[in-house]
Image 1: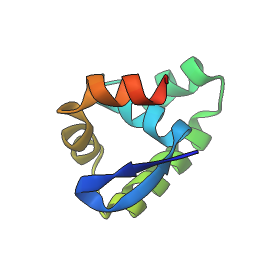
Image 2: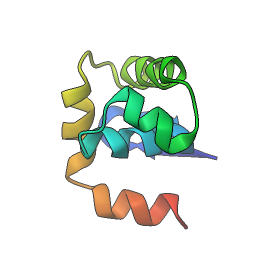
Image 3: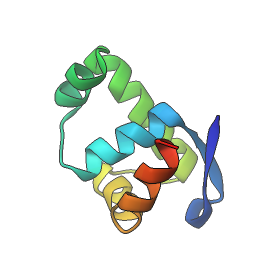
Image 4: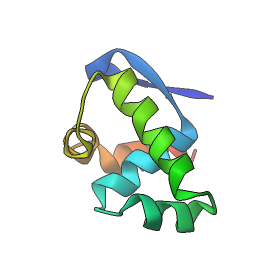
Amino acid sequence: KKYYVQNNDCFLSKKEILICLEIVKGNSSKEIGKKFYINRKTVEKHIFNIKTKLSIHKNTEIANIFKEDMEEIISIVNY
């Protein structure tokens, strides 16, 4: 299932959304990898793909996009 990011007119996978939420919390790639039982490099590849889809360059930009709607996003992803 894909989730639409209205501000950026793109779709992200559930895993990408979950990684975005971890970035909002301030977690590093290593911490995110441990949480989801995936390699740090895999997390970094997901983050690269997210930034490409959103046409942004920094993790802080990911946090800014998702910070405002974090509660709503969590409820949608956990639906």
